[in-house]
Length: 592
Image (cartoon, rainbow, N blue to C red; front, side, top):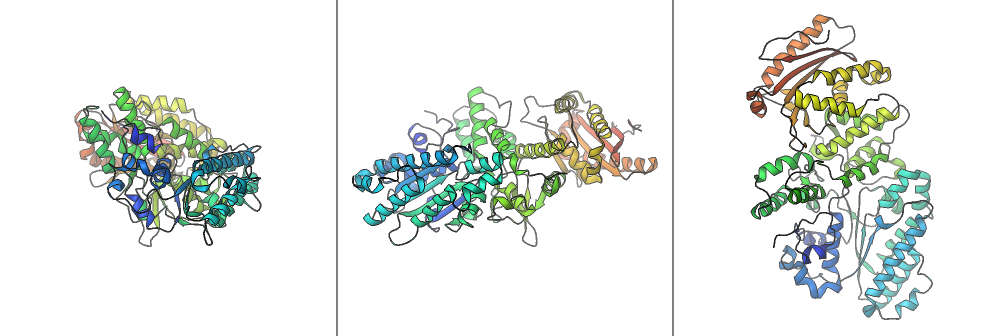
């Protein structure tokens, strides 16, 4: 019976028992056990963290000892078990279940945590003895007090080690921060705040003779809350950028290839594996979390499973390449763009990424929410949220962070566009922009698109202060043209020993693949430049485009007559020339 796609399923036991496909990550258990006992891992949302914790929970939980062969027998760890398997009492929290409504968050936190701990006690009552309930009397409604009472009882009894796991530890605090601001967030995480108090109890439960919590594994999407509630993450080891754990969550290329090979053999698709990867890789791949694993980039596992589930259910690729749940999560992260009046430095970071495609940054391992808007911390936050990934390391040892794929780039550009709109710097009808991009893609009418952008800039004077120089022009165009799903838009694309400013490659992920391919060269000259100078730049662009058109990557489009070579020239903020090279003949400028 063909294995099912485990899209949206984080229950490891269900995956193993109900014949779902599981990408084996159990070999990491050996590596985890060689680390210090209290671990902290940051990864972007929907990247496989919850399933990883579920797998660890069932491996270590004493309750599943008699199911070890069923759950792990066909996996790596089943053939290479460690002495600690099924030797712990597992206490597991998922803080995404805590309400972020400021009027009820503390009550919700206590209610959820206490229910989990009381269920924990009920599950292991045969090991504790019924007398544990007397020890817990009076503390059943306050999370910190109940955890402290459990710790005291187990420490006194001995030989009952707890493996404490917290999934999405910062889920509700991030929402509080984004919805209500730093004042309410500080009340929960600083001083006598209820979250800080709870983590103080956790720390106490990990220290001293007979401490109940022997091992700890916490996951989240940023180090911010952990820094605030523990004064600098002093209760564990951060393995986020440890090269040994670069591929702990997410899928490697090999893992995706193996999965595709399995389903192709089962007859779920007839395309080659490379054809399937050609669609997924530009949109879901290129996440790297360690400077020492630059060649071992990861796919977002949730997005891969979304694509494969849709494809195998409907027999075609999804019309929307982005999982709607991922879009929702991206929207929740919009608070990280803390824009001062006039946009501020962090907006400049986003713009630099748009213009250059990358940015240098030393990744901060901890910082407070009050320090989030510091430029270097802000860059680190973009990395932790998965909006940037480690691409390279400079000769000075500084990481180079880049946008990992088109799905993320679209979101980043939406932040940029939202910033322009929020501060009334530039507004444009995005629906019309999409229609004009469609005309360019399917009817070769590219002039209307660039004329529309040029007219909008001419009519809205405030944007002009942000358009000064070739890089600014290119960044501006990339932001607005890059949100189209008809094309995979490559800036500074290497083609035949040169670099085209923009390569519009028809996107295999588009609902309908457009026929036309574009190479676009953008030139810029200062205000007051003569028409002769404009003409000289256009001629220079023409020669470059003819050179780029010889590249193998555009040979098919050129042979079919579907390759468009376009030059546009800006004089300051004004578009003064547009022309297309046809049959290598020179044409009169379309705008004078």
